[in-house]
Length: 198
Image (cartoon, rainbow, N blue to C red; front, side):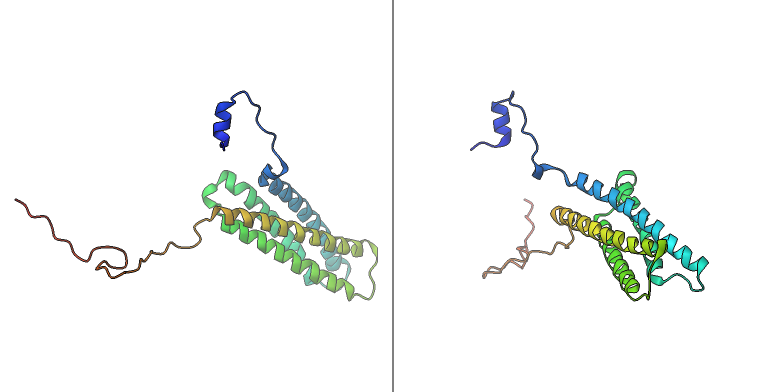
């Protein structure tokens, strides 16, 4: 059985194989997810800002905390996407894979909490009509899509981090069994005399 390098050495004029679906780099998938995350974050920010402005200007009550939460999370998402995409390229010393996994998980959890809380708030309203109600309902839908996008990207980035290992566990010293010898646990002789000079 020959390996790929031996086969290529024996047949140098053979054209390379076309990449299959399994060989597609996950970086293109991640880049597409980042673009969708950024786009949906801008949409959620616009929708929730519209609803918050309506509450603060046209009513006597301030905007609900659920709207404010989704507005803050969308700003956090924009900052997160900028960090995750620009830092590895322009400041690799500031980039760390564990921070990336943490940001992915935080965004997924924040959007999950946000769209669930806003949907519960909307279900308890006595009536809901007009463009403000439509904007709030749309922000729930886009928040749910953002949750799904961040969950998928968190899984993909988590797989990449687990494959690379990152040395997350500290190396522990290896102890060997004594087996009746006079050597210590690290197989080091207890004493050794220096050679005598003649």
